[in-house]
Length: 322
Ligand code: CP
Image (cartoon, rainbow, N blue to C red; front, side):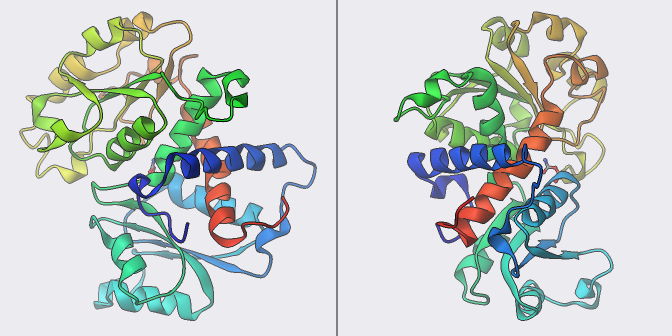
């Protein structure tokens, strides 16, 4: 693995190996000394051309746990406002000694361009590009699901991904969601069954070819007792105006596709509620659901550090003892 750009670039064994490495990384965090020396003396850079809380901080925490020095570029306050290009920005950061670039960009394909156009010669990790891919989010989601659903036993089987046969409902704004695209691909690769639930206006053209089922009725899907329900954020910033005509009103969206108190009560006993964050409380998920015993939202965030430690380790330090 040279870069981490899209879940479609991973084989099943590479994805499973990354999740297994993340388990090792999580185990190191129970030690008294939590920092591993594997990236000591090396610089890792985050380059965020689009806003982020979880992904940027999580990558920075992961790199620091591996003893890397971290330099951080954010679009706000940078020379982007003076017209500096993606190419010149990336080359500037790498010239300062960065040995990996963690890139988020509002344009789909920007990390792929950096990886393949020869402007820089370092591993590129995609931290979310437009509506396209968010591979480490899907990996941390798979890691979280695997921990909850397979309770260790099945992971002992050599060919098991830990997710074979699981059923995951992904609900909401699929159209604008790189999280949904990444999760559908990765979950299918790992043997899980995915049902997308959304209004027709929030499903992308061409998704008939995706390896998943589709429903327009959340209550029908919940009645099938999925193992996990992943609520997607309604991405109002990617809609042309408030609502953008994608749904009649926030109230109507919430009534049809929100995880409200009644739907929370309909979840199976062991079912988990996931959300990539940031949550629109009161729109796609009610506060009671977000804070319920079913919710694993904060676990997803915590697991993100282990998964990103694994990704950085495999790209930059593979073979070193952890
Ligand atoms: N899940 C996620 O990508 O969150 P941020 O936008 O805060 O990084």
